[in-house]
Length: 217
Ligand code: GS8
Image 1 (tube, helix red, strand yellow):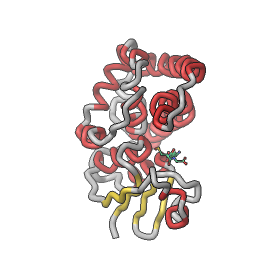
Image 2 (image 1 turned 90 degrees about the horizontal axis):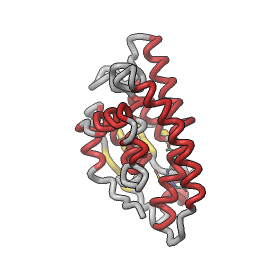
Image 3 (image 1 turned 60 degrees about the vertical axis):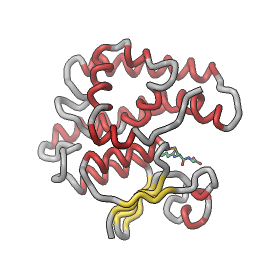
Image 4 (image 1 turned 120 degrees about the vertical axis):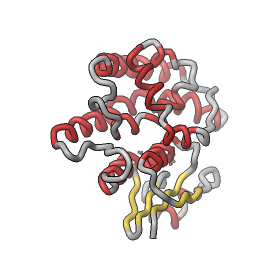
C-alpha cells in the first residue's frame, strides 16, 4: 500500500503536497477528485476529511488532511530521502524551520489567500471581486514581505542557507499571486524576488506548476 493523494492539480493546497512528494522523489498515486461535481462534499470523501476539503493523503491505514500537516509528515517520515526539509540533524535548526513554517501559515497565508480568492475564485463563480478586500490584504501582505525582505537579505532561504519546508509551503500560493496584477509586491523587493526565482525554478515545483492552470481576472 503506497502513498495516495486525493485532490485536483490546479488546487494550490494539492500542489503544496505534490511539490513536497516530488521534492522527495517519492512514488505516489494521484486520485483526481471531481471537485466541480462536489465529490469532496459526499460521504465517501467526508470519511477521509470531515471538513470536505482537498487535499487528502493516505499512507496505508493513515489518512491525513490539511496540506501543511501532510507536507510536515512527508518531511518527517522520509527525512533520509532527497533533501532534508526540516534539518532533522540539528534541533536548533529544525526549530527555526518550524518557526518559518508557522510564519507562512499564520502571517503570509491570511494575507495572500483573500487576494487569490478575489482574483481567481470570485470571477469563476460569476461574481465581482471586492477591491476593498484586495487592497486591505495587499497592505497586510506588503508588511509581511517587508519582514521577508529583511530576513532574506541575511539568509538565502527563510530558515537559513538551505531550502526547507518553510520555503516549500510558500510555493503554490505565490505561484498564483505572480499571475495577478499585484506581482510587483514580490518583484519590487530584490531579496524576495531572488528567493522566489530560486525556489520556483526547482525541478520538483516546475513539474507541479505546469498543471496549475487558474487564470486571474
Ligand atoms: C485548506 C484546503 C482548501 O482550502 C489545507 O489543506 O491546507 N487548510 C486547508 N482546499 C480547497 C481547495 S483549494 O486548495 C477546498 O477543498 N475547498 C472546498 C471547501 O472549502 O469547501
